[in-house]
Image (cartoon, rainbow over all chains, first blue to last red; front, side, top):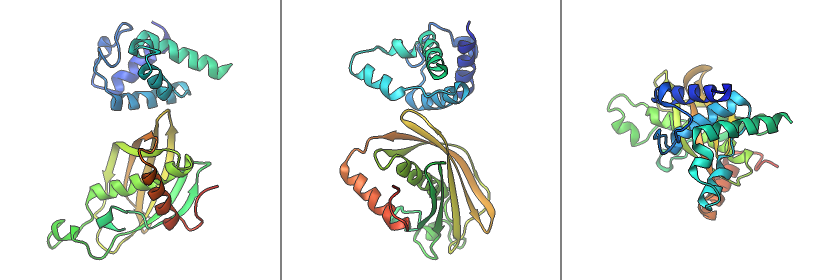
Length: 93
Length: 154
């Protein structure tokens, strides 16, 4: 597992009641882990602070609502981890 | 405070959108029907109204910081501590600081003091959304102008 994914697991486990061993790359944060949008605000806050980024939740939501992206595109945990890496790389470039 | 109208803040005494901080005054009224029930013979401002006071103070900071283009709605209250009873006819000093501005949400920390002593504090999370109606935006602008002596932020 990447260090980003490990940090993501720690954040989700700390901000929810989900055991770390259940938080695996093939899980979708919403549909598999049962995280709701309010819980995800806490997770987004922790991710933003940990990585020094701003997860574009509004833009992602708009894309999903417009049918341009699926929930898995952003919230499958392996994908979310990749998105975080992309945002960190963009911030540092 | 105009408790019947849920208007908790009387004056915004200091507003610094650039650094994300606000200070406000909230005067607890001498009389209110709320005190008849909370509690008979021992009138106290309910703790939920202290939290609402911190939320409204934070809310004005967030509104002003976003130039009244979006409305913050209280979404969660964390680590709320209600340390002291608040009686009628008390002048409360409220401060709020922007902890984080995310995508569609903001997080603040806020506290209320009386006579320099901390009464309560909490971390507050707000969903920030477009105004559902222009009327609400106008009402918020009007209320802000009433309680902020120097008017709207530039």
